[in-house]
Image (cartoon, rainbow, N blue to C red; front, side, top):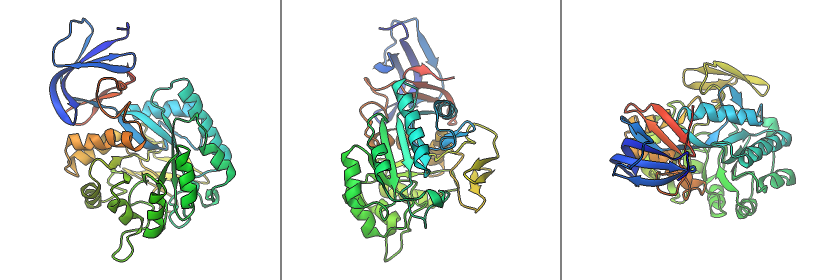
Length: 380
């Protein structure tokens, strides 16, 4: 046992989909080494006397936080501030997200993530390119000048093998099934979004290997009686994962409940789509050639389009558990095991089990984060 090994004694722990009482969890060398109901013979036991110990939250769509945006400052300091801000709310693994931009910004973002992974920066496990191969009609706050077809420059970027998890959001009317199949064969996880495609086009993309949908309902063709659109395909296809933003602004609670009933917690996952104000008192910030204004939990650009969120993962879990009446265990799965499965990381994270990474969150009974561990290290 290494000198940095530590036992946690929790009054309640989420294990195998159930809350287990009075458990001891040994953290050692960044991993969970042992779980026991018996008190260990050790002088190094941290008591977690209230609340519940959970797997760390995994957020696959994070644009910013701590007062910085990844697009604006795609460097190591931005990644550090983003992770610091979001770990306060239980996020222990994230995909920093760069939205549609020029190739130089995308390459700089990739370089920053590569360097972070190489030096073992806590919580940075890959990158999410949300665009630029998106529909102009459903672009939302993505700058129209940045939207474009897939070229050799972007393809070379997505093929890099030093970026950890590579997630790419595309509109299927802008990227062919053949291109999607090629990307998937090279290890890229393809998600569909910001699209006005009809159901046949979406289905062809899924059949080509697209794995899920980016922020369900938002920026996509709607479900109607004679044209199911992207929303209909997302809800109907049992293979597909769907991210959803539960901030009370992006999706009506009833629509979110429809999604949960259709997909189950095994395919519906929580994302924040967080922007720079998370973890700060920021009320507005510059965004490309304009600015974004915060009004409570709502962020809008000057054209009135929703521009990301100020949501954190702990709040998303709380919303799912209470407003959607899913309960804590189901809500936590949507923030842990389900995103881990989506990005192919179930073997190493997403649940509390021997041999998995010691990424943990201690929540109070009211859903507030008390402590957070990444690879066994307590985050301050």
